[in-house]
Every structure is written in structure tokens, then in C-alpha cells.
Image (cartoon, rainbow, N blue to C red; front, side, top):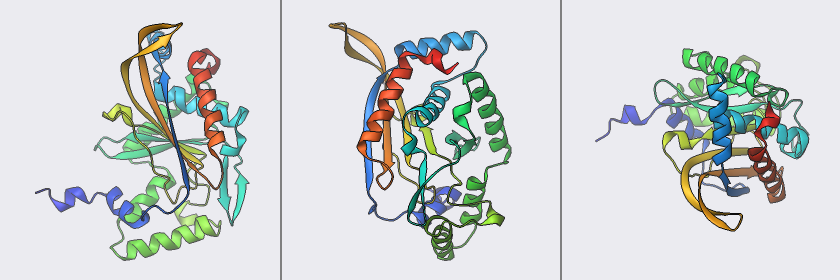
Length: 265
């Protein structure tokens, strides 16, 4: 039998405190993307010395989408009102050295290009793996160290102060806008084909985007059946802030950028 200590990681302790049976209104969606040519673009850039991945592409594409096409996604709820964020900040899930998931925050992601994004993300990942985590991840460690059931009570108090009342907790570096504009996670990199994410109750983000696995599939191109490289892309959106139509705009923008990745340079 699995040792209970191995099962009860910091994140599992936090999850047991913050998640309840789903009652909130969410909008889910998914698409399949033909990334054949995009992978060729990434491969060519890597040969030139720019170590980009599909995750870099998606982080920057989504940031540009919020700036150029869908500003409604760059909002959060504070004191019962929808508030526009002052900047477009990305939160990206990363795999830590111990196998657990962490995250890094990319401020002003919409102002970057591919080269500068690679530099920023590399620095932030190195900081995260050294233990220099952002305030959101530091709060996870603090919360996990609190014994049950006090952990549950503390989280409810924290959520009430930051999310419901829209106030800050300075000594934790947390506020109703701590987690950035959106969250991106690449589950394809850990072997999952597709998945539908959760809206972290304490994050106050408008949506979470999940990059799934890539596989060869037969598709119709110019009335001919050909084998292409297809990636699944899933999203969950906060229905208080946006509707399915906003998700449709985001996916259309992503599909356009998949065909024109050079515009991110």
C-alpha cells in the first residue's frame, strides 16, 4: 500500500482544503489544432539557436489575443464587480525537479516577442527550481504546513479577504489579482492526450488553457486525406466574466497564429 506521506504532498494538502464539489458556473471547450507547420517553424528556430517550444508559442499567442482581440479575458472579480487588469500577466505551470508541479509568472507577457519570452521564462524556471517561488506558490507552502482542519479555515478566511472582499494580505504578497491574467499548462509533455482543467478557486483568473498531446491523424487538406500532426487544446472559463463566444474568438486567434507564427517575432 502507498505510504500516506507520499500521497499527502503539499499540493494534495492544499487541494483538500480549497476544492469542494463543483457548484460554480464554468464553460468548457476544446479544439484540435494542426500543428504540423508550427512544429517545423519551432524546429527551424531551434536550429538557429532560439530554444522555443510550443508552450512559448501558446503563452505569447494568448497574451497577444487578450491585448488585440479579447480584452474581456483580462479581467477579474473584485467586490462583486468585474475589474480590468492593469497588465497582461501569464501564469505557466512547470514541472519541478521533484516531479511536482509548480508555476511561474510572466509579467507583461503581451509586450514580449519569442526571443525575450524564452529569456524570461528560462530565468523564472531556474528561480522556481531553486526554491525562489512567486507569492502564489509560496502561499501554497504556507497553507500546506497548517494542520487540518485549521488549514480549511485558514483558506476560507484567505479567500474571503482576497477574492470576496478584494483586499490584500501584504505579508503573504497576495491579493485578488495575484495569479495573473490566465493560466497555461502543457499536460501533453507529461503523457496526457487531453484534459479539462479546474478553475483554481483562489486564482481569480478568467480561464485556464490546457495543451494536450500531439499525435498523427488523417485530415482533409485541399480535398485530400493526408496525415498531419494534431494537438488537442482545452479551456475552462469563468462564466461570471466571459461567455462561450469569447472562447471562440480566442481559438480563432490561436488558429490564425498557428498559421502565421512569424508574427510573434
